[in-house]
Image 1 (cartoon, rainbow, N blue to C red):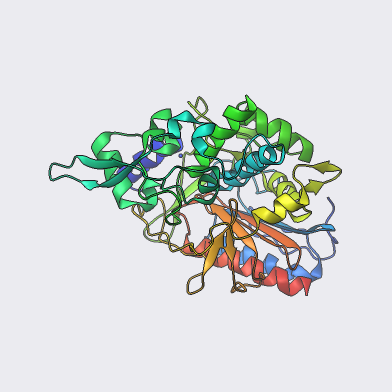
Image 2: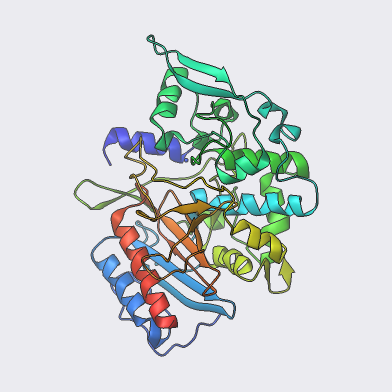
Length: 426
C-alpha cells in the first residue's frame, strides 16, 4: 500500500461444537491450523491450504452449517502478522457490511412488535428525513445542484437500498460531493455524514448505500437504546454471541485478525485497521466486529427460521419475508467502483437478474458454485462473505481481512469452498 493510500486507509480504518469427525486432518502448512472435518470435505481443506500457500490470503476461516448443526469448520494460516498466532473460529474480524444483517434483524423485531410499519414514512420516526434533497449535478464552479425530493422515504426503501442514498466508494457523484463540501464519509462514524443527498427519487431504483445506517438510527429512536445495547440484549446474548459488538474489549482486540492490503504485485501488506471506538453514532451499516463462531450462530438462527438453542430472535414468517424479493421489477446491478483502492467493481451474479430482500442479495437462478435459486447472500468490505440456501438448507461463511473488496483471489477461494461443500453434502 503506497503512503497516500495507506494514510487514506488509516483515516477510514480509524474511522471505516464437535464437528463430524476427527478422522481426516489436513497436513498443516507453517503457521496453519488445519481444518477439523470429515473425509467428505477434504477438498475444502486442500483448497484453503493452497490459498494460504499461494499467499492468496494470510489466513482464512470457513464454516458451514445445516439445521442439524455445524458440518464444516476450517481455520488456515495466520491471524496475526506479528505474533504468527494461527486463525481460529474465535479470531475477531471486522464485519463491515455483514453488520447490516444484524441491523435489519433489529428493525424486523420492532416491526414484529408493531412499533414500526414497513411501509411507514421514515420521517415518522426520524424527522430529519422529512425533506430529503436530491443531487442533480454540479454547477460550472463545482457547487452541487440540489432539489427537494418529490417522494417520501419509506422504511421499506431504507431496508432495500431503494431510498436514493448511495456510498461514495461506488458513486462518482457522491465522491465528488464529499470532496467539494467536506462532508465526511459514513465510515468516519460522524453524524455529519448523514447530510448526504439522495441520488434519485425514493423507490426509483436499487443502489447500495447508507440506508442501513439510517435504519440503525431508526432502531435507536424507536427502542430508546443504542445499537450496542440493543444488539447485545436482543440478538447477541440470546444466541450466545459473546464476541460481537461495536465497542471492542482489550481481550478481543488481542484476537483481531491482521488487516492486509493487496499490493499491485499481488502480495499482501499488513496495515492497521479499527472501527472508531468513540463514534458519534454506531454504524448499523458496517461498524461491528464478530467471530466466525458467533456469526455462524446468527446464520444458523436465520436458517432455522429465527431460532437457535431455544432462543428465538425472529418469527419464521418474518425470516421468510426477509428472504423474498422486496424490490419488485427493480434489479440489483453491478456496483462500479469510484474508489479502486477500497473496492473493485463487482456483480455477484453477472449475466442473471438478482433481487434484494430485507437486507440480502437474492440470486433468482442457481448460483455458479452450487447454491439454489432463491438463496440469500452478502459480504463485508474486508472480504468476508456468507450465503444461506433455504432450499438445500445450508449456510456458509468465509472470513478474511483484505482490501480491496471483491479481491479476485479471495472470491475464487469462496467459490471453491461453496462448490466443495455442496459436493461433500451430496
